[in-house]
Image 1 (cartoon, rainbow, N blue to C red):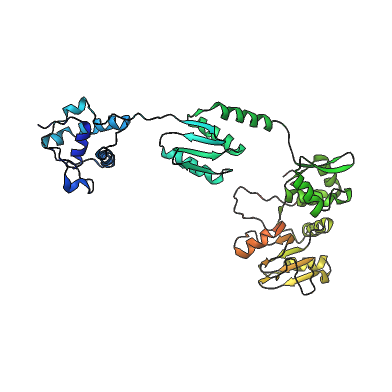
Image 2 (tube, one colour):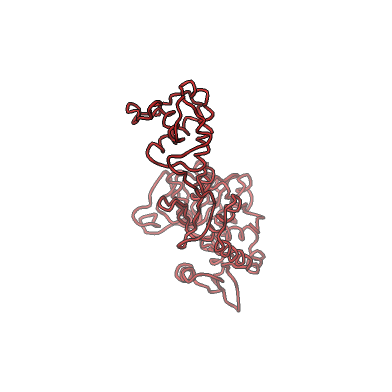
Length: 405
């Protein structure tokens, strides 16, 4: 019976890389595909192929690979005996190359102002980080040279990855813990970018200088007479409205107007919209805050909303459009006189026009021209039962009654 000195010899012989009798290189097979001399179980093939390829190029196995190699060789004792090979030396293994000790620890920390994660290869962890990377705030990547995952140090990433690391039994660096503690402390302190009325003046608390300048330059400033506009722009510019202002606004103008001013999108029940004052209240809201032009998009060509519009407003204020069209080289100019009508009715999407308020009888606004029209509309009202958006979690409130949405 033939015995070999090293476990690596057995691996190379099984793989067909060395002659069983002399351990000379099998030149006919050295640079060809893995061709074992015995019949292997399917689940052992890839493991033995990988290990035999590694040792044939002078690479040491890891400690875990070494343990597995001994078990696999011993497993095929009977087949190897039929080839005249004795596996007894494998039971007291000797190694051609000292086994490599691997770091199997899991660690998350902060280095050079980035969040780093180190852990041994695990498909499930890698898949989870790749999925998180799609919605992470800041860059996330695998650093091949340092063999670690790295994510930008942002509040969102920090909180998520600490929780993820805890769930997966990572060692968590003290700096990660410290920063998370600071975030948690800040979250306990009320903080809102909020429209308030203080000492007889309107202001937006905690607003950046950029937001303040924008309101002054483009939204009419902070005068008391500009309150309707400031409330209406809250949902567009991303600030909230204080409870006292909301309560006074609700008392003065009702739930419909409050919802329209504090939401970018609302919907009306199409079964009642045109036979009650719902549709009229939307037009009154546009008049109150100067949200023009009002574009009424009615692709089903039923003209039901157009009929209601002409009954409520002067016909000379209404521009009726048919078919698909562009405004021209100057955004906002819709006719040869250089003016935009207060109300525009169309059966096909409008391009290149900044829309103050879009009223649509369609609840699905996907596709090239419709998407562009939506992007150009600061606010939208859907006269439809259901509204479909790309964000499935996004819910569009009803016009009436949803005061606290």
